[in-house]
Amino acid sequence: MKRAGCLMFAAVPVVVTATVYFFMPGETKSDGAGSGGRPSASQPSGRAAEDAMIADLPPGLAAPEKKELAQKIVTSAENSTLNWRDQYGYIEDIGDGQGYTAGIIGFCTGTHDLLVLVERYTKAHPDNGLARYLPALRKVDGTDSHQGLDPGFTAAWKKEAKVEAFREAQNAERDRVYFEPAVRLAKLDGLGTLGQFIYYDAMVMHGPGTGPTGFYTLRERAVSEADTPAQGGKEKAYLDIFLDVRREAMKSKKSHRDTSRIDTAQRRFLYNGNLDLDTPLEWAMYGETFRVAK
Image (cartoon, rainbow, N blue to C red; front, side, top):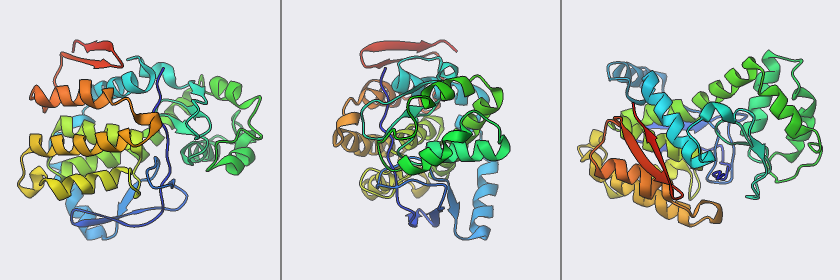
């Protein structure tokens, strides 16, 4: 089983195309390459115009069958399986310095997103089995410590993962933090379904951070080398550059150095010209072959 490391990011503004996005305190994580914040536009009128434009576009990765496919591909990289719904109760410390990694998208006790998930879930469901660990989760946030979590937290997580409301909470947080911001920006950049997935997978692994390996930094580096389709560039050429930039960032970190998710999956889709991420689809992850028939 392989899991991407979870990282944190700073609450500072990032310029993206013509819109300024901000990472909101309490919803974000920070060390420069993190997971966990939802960007919001600084100018409501600009945001409304972007929303209107996006509403006129095809659903792309947001189409139910494409979103399901996206979850399968991500989970093949994160957990070496296509059965992403089996991962709600997943929890372990993978030794990447981020504490416990858990759930369908790899929420981490050391990087704020797991804390936010449990806080939001507890607000809606005060009597849940994880609520008693909130003081400890706040104390270990930003560290790899298990203090106050052992020995009962992992069992409590697995038990709570059997509750439908907690599964729905994980889905909602995945969408709020990772899926929706990634797909939105990809559409603004003029990218099709494959490009939207490439952004989403990068957001999952690197998080919407502003440091050297944060998603928005990687995207800005790619834009400095190639125009997006929205800027008049060629989609395949731009995505090839983005994957180059991301691969370099992965290689810079010990926990990310296996770049199968780029080399034998996303790059394969791109070079095959499958910009719509159509099925049937076949790819390799860590030497194992995965297939989705339809």
